[in-house]
Image (cartoon, rainbow, N blue to C red; front, side, top):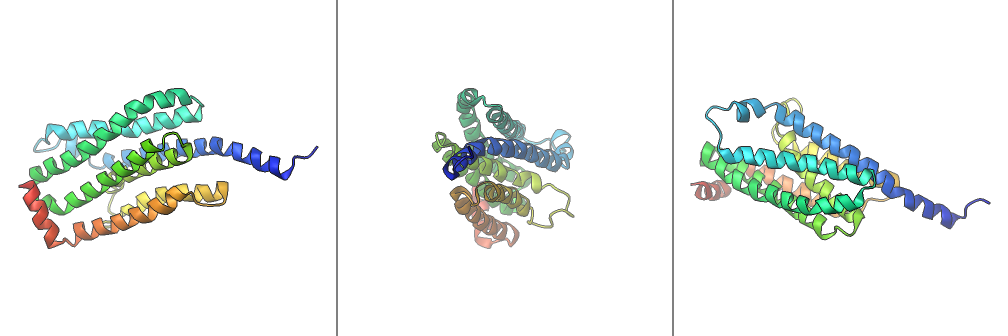
Length: 241
């Protein structure tokens, strides 16, 4: 007998998580590609063979940052192959790793500001603070909603997308002139919203709230960093000196 409309809706809803698994697993590799390509432009001259040698904390930060990106791939893969119990167990390590990314992100911004000089690095400091704070908020929400997969996966996807600003910002100038590298970040997030529309016919509330908020923060950050705002320069100078 043909399935009723109610049964058809039920069958479709059960298929959504599996399709979501494919999407977030695939997007984890897009994130890796962005990070590898972006940092591949500068890692040799600015880190591995930098002159003068960079502070040791920068190497720790780079390892922790990379660990989070690859951890996100692993966690997405575990969900994709239905190893959810292992995914949850590793989540405790992920919580500690994500917290480390936040702490080191703030710390290294100050350390590198002092290394390069307060006046030279001051405008960039605000971008580092805003991106790291955005990651921390989205990451914390992902942990808070860990028992609600529809929210959990989107918040952690958003948090990881925010980190790609560091990769997009290192793309060749013909890709993103000036501060327009944030468009790359927003396009990744917009892909998630479009995926929701294609799959469910609507955008999930996480995207409806988070994306406009992130764009507003990016605009403020770009204004402060690239104007540059004299008030912020004075604040940054006091922080770094």
